[in-house]
Length: 389
Image 1: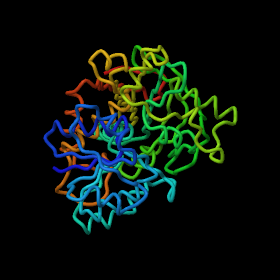
Image 2 (image 1 turned 180 degrees about the horizontal axis):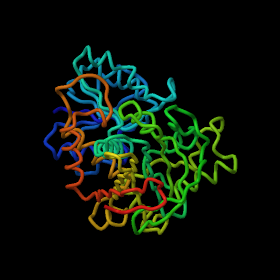
Image 3 (image 1 turned 45 degrees about the vertical axis):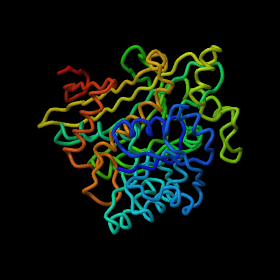
Image 4 (image 1 turned 180 degrees about the vertical axis):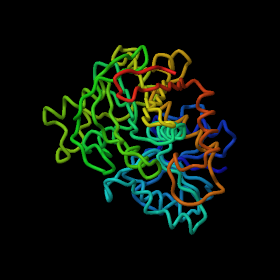
């Protein structure tokens, strides 16, 4: 395919390289061409065109001839880029939602009929979390006869002396100031930020850590596809603890805007290497867990998926200058493109893909250096005791 990648930061640049290795014709668009080239690297031959993501026609001119538009920009630009993809008669893929016009349904679904009319697919929230987490939740639901709850638990930790944006600073800020969405007893609700503290046990070497309610797209997507009573998402790790501390100090208010001191620009690969040499950035980790509780026959079960990704230290040992979150998100986006459902049409999330496609994507992810483990636990009917199967 001919793929136009919009947004050449830590995730977009790596996704562009991965797609080029798959054999696609790839070019990129970004408002800062020189900075984009620094992310792509000196040896990269991938073309970068200057694009104003606030202007539909700027995107259309830069993306003319594309079969697929991969949107790696902050979600605030989603609607503009969706309109541009329609004018290009191209398929579309993005990494997250903005949830402004409808607090409990991704804004991309407003374009469903228009993509149907063009016979094109818009695959939304197709990264790691959301993305891989959606697939794991749906696969867990398929192993059960009925589902009671789905819980997403994420771990984001950066060992650094100063704040470092290991993914999009804009996305991190948007997540920090947004109220969490929860689905309780079959109804959508807005939760309180950094509420419902829980001690959650991640696999070693992370272990037990506090997690808190967070704004995650999975909560506003899964209940439409899985008959379930409760869905929520929580995040832990020192990155989220830092946001929680700023919130309690009154430093995270929408009226104050995004302070670059707290949400610096995503560092280029060369800047990451410099931060490591200076001892400012030591390591970073990213992990995800998806817990699906329900019944099989008359037996209550807990289906748990754990996904671990290479740490910053491990990536550096391989000579890669990428953060764990950008690495995981870019690789998952490339896997979704590899299995892109071009025969379908309309706007859909990962869990709505055909079962065979979902299984192929999960198999591809597990074949990489992601550690994806499944554990099914038989629950006593009074839930006082558990027995691992």
